[in-house]
Image (cartoon, rainbow over all chains, first blue to last red; front, side, top):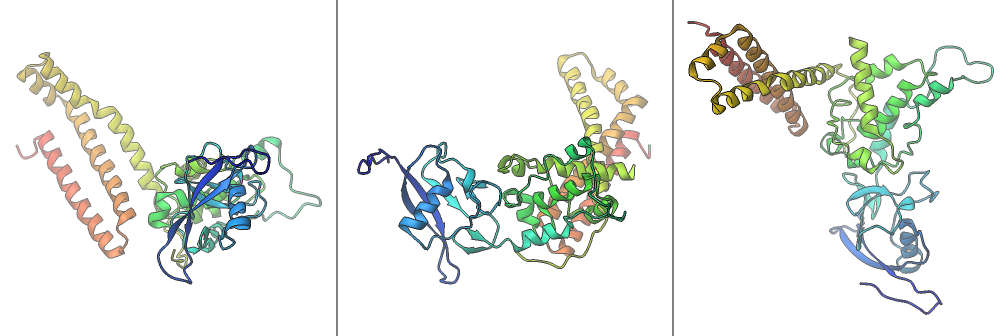
Length: 246
Length: 120
């Protein structure tokens, strides 16, 4: 249904949203609440609509947000069945009513806010920092442009969790399978010419559950808001392990 | 989500991944061959004696053996992976995978015995 408003001098369509509401502290069952938000500007993003609800309609709606530009990775959510970042998802093109749910398979803290603790535990487990035994040079560790290009497609990850929480293998075995985001970052450090612990990193990953639960379903690649390809990174780790053994 | 204490790596998984892909390549080569035989029979290009001569040939038996090994290995690893995905209690998982291994190995050996006419 489209409603025309002309009171403020502009004609604006209404956006229809259905948003997952749940407060575990209050108990009860989760519900989907309907909202209508005016489309106020061209190129309006989904986060703008959520902000409008929060600031004008219902201040209890809870979600994470920060930079609003797809850099911080805070506002990952399930939008019409596909994970994405609300701040860089245009309203135009989304089927209405826009159904917004929290990231799948995560414990809900409230409404669209999920518990990311396990996700970041898994990220920490791959030791996502440069490890080197050679002495620290006077200025900086240099890379050739070619070596630097090796980590294109992985360093851009903002750890929003959209890929990992869209992975069925992670839904089934998330307690052991590291998931696409952590493995993409593991590959990032294996590829980095300045890191000297590739062998130890591969040792830590060579496991039927930590790594090989990836069945190349490719949901991660489909939903990544930064257009990265974790499946390719995981395949690179597998091939590196094979090359090491052959 | 339950956060479990990390028990480290089992250093496995690579061989399953490797053999599953190797057996898939082998299947790609050998699986069309029986269908080729079927086509030969139904198109009338092969009569019963020609078919038996072909099946008795050493090369046919060799390809048949490769096909059996590829099917058993590929199916075993695939089903094992599915069981690992869905069956979470470790003892039940080990029991099911072990049972499947025995059943598939038996079927494979029986099939090989037929191909090579072991025991007469």
